Every structure is written in structure tokens, then in C-alpha cells.
Image (tube, rainbow, N blue to C red; front, side):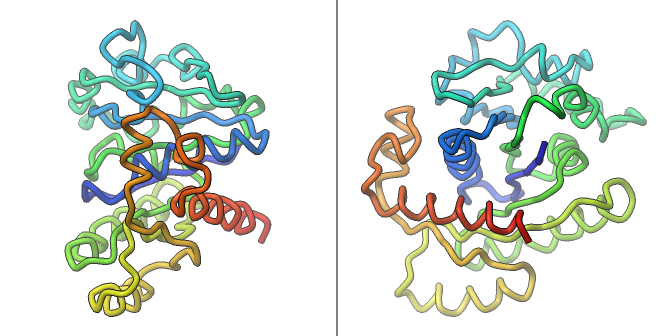
Amino acid sequence: MIVVSIANQKGGEGKTTTSLNLAWGLARRGKKTLLIDIDPQANSTGIFLNPEGLEKSMHNIFQSKAKIREVMVKTEVENLNIAPSRLTLAEAETIAAIVDAPYILRDALADLEKEIDFCVIDCPPSLSIFTINALVASNYVIIPLQAEKFSVDGILGLQQTITSIKKRINPSLEIMGALVTQLKPQTLLTKTIIPVLTKYFRIFDNSISDGVAVGESHLARKSVYEYNKSSRQAQEYEGFIEEFLNELKK
């Protein structure tokens, strides 16, 4: 099982959109895929389920140390399961003081190793105990971000957290790269910021352009492929997923 965290402590960078479309795209390619939503806002969950109607969710993982198998739900998409979130997950942040707090998610995933090909984790917009759990459990991190100054300003904190976790807890953790989202390619800001970003991380060759298809797909509770497979954003996410899979072969 390959575990990938989609992380950035800044909100509005495209984490949920990237998590959803990566998980959907892998499932469409016949990969047994699990999408884990560890954001109390439960935006990924809301595409598939009503978060408030759930009997079990990621809250049970962090509060009761349940196994992922006990909370995951099969979606209508073939090969795609989701471990859902709900607002009550925020209450579980109090576990941060517990000695084994960073390992809860990794331990909860252990018995799925041979059943799932890919696990995609949609992280909250913070460097909370939930994001730390995701990084401890992951093989790779993908960082969605916009080509703007405030996105660059937040990168150092995330980079330091990843470096610390790699050094102290999870030596196999690797930053696969940053995915530029909501790209406006012809602007002076974009042309200025992209070279700056490359100083911190590898930037995926594929980027996701600014456009309405992604937002409309959320309203329709679909992936961008299902909503409009001929849209530019659908084609760009397809290109990104192929690039992601090719990186794994190296």
C-alpha cells in the first residue's frame, strides 16, 4: 500500500480537490483506493456522504483507536472507499499530549496493507496533530499550492515539519512535489513566483489552471472527470495522475 498525504497548512490551495481527483483517478485505473478525510470540515466526505448522518468516522480512530476498517465506507465509485470525517473530529485534537498520538493513524491502517493499493489522505489546513499523523503514516507528500506570495510564505513551516518527521519518526517520508493549482499562466506574478517555488520543492510538470469546472464539479458532488471530462481541468488532473504514477516507477 502506498500512502500519500495531500498537505498544506494554508487553506484554499486545492487540497480537497486534489485528494478527490487523485483518489478518483487511481480508482478509475483499477487501483484499490482509500480516501481518508482527516479534516474536521469534512469537505471530501460531503462529496460522497452526509457527514452528520455517520455512525462512525475518523473521530472514532483518534478518540477510541478504532481501525480504519471499522469506519471506511464503500462509495459508488468502483474501487474507491472513503474513511469519512465529521465536525466532531475537531474534539480529538486534545490527544496531542498523549505519547503515542503521532502514530494513531499509522497503527489504524496497518491491517489494510495487503487490501489497498493506494491511500490518499486529505489533510486539514493546519499543522495539527491530524496532519502530523498523516505524515507519520505516509510514504509521500504532495503539496498543492497557488502561484502567489502568501502560498510561498507558508511553505517553510510545512517544510520544517516534514523534515523533522522524516528525521525523527518516518525516515521513508518523501516530498514528491508541489502541484500548482488555480494557475493563471500569463500573469507577471505567476512568472515571478514559479521560479521561487522551485527552490523549495520539485514542481510537477502538470499544473491545474484556473477555471469553473472544478468548483462546479464540487456542487455536483462529482469528480471533475465525471462532471466534464473534456474540461481543461479534467485533462490536467489526468496528466498529473500519470506523472504521479510515473514518479513511483523511478
